[in-house]
Length: 198
Image (tube, helix red, strand yellow):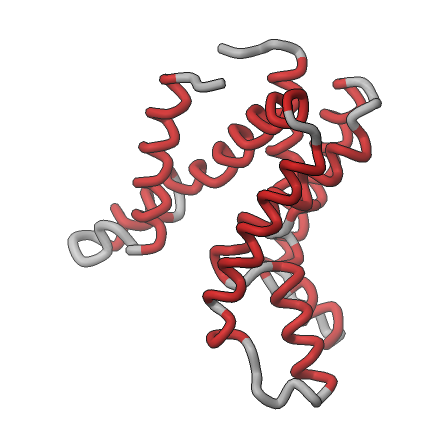
């Protein structure tokens, strides 16, 4: 199933993602760069998750969840192996190095968080798909609000506890499949399931 409007939108969103990572307009005007890079362009990734959720419904209807999961997980594994030299420590024997390796593998190395985010979001959908759209959307909105709260705490709060500060201080606390991927993915899934195609 292809939709020309969505395909064109994906092209525009891809350019936005490139703009984020290249800090577009930064050398011309820091203010203009801020408006685009930390503003307008930031809608790209959430919309990509919505599109993935939209197509995910169609994929599992035709091929089943297992084939979709297998293909996505193999894609993730291949890219994690490609980037292995950047996050793998030769001293894997130490507990800290092993935990760091497992942490990176579970959350994705840099931009690969998006792939594992989609896989994790799809797994949550697979668990809750027998529930109503109202339940799924309510659950998705709840997770989004928790993620948004964590993000605001990350930026604006200071904690005396080293443990709390290290958890909240990491973008991984909110930029993951539970608080970011699933809410958007769930919106796309429900939109397709209820045939809200436009």
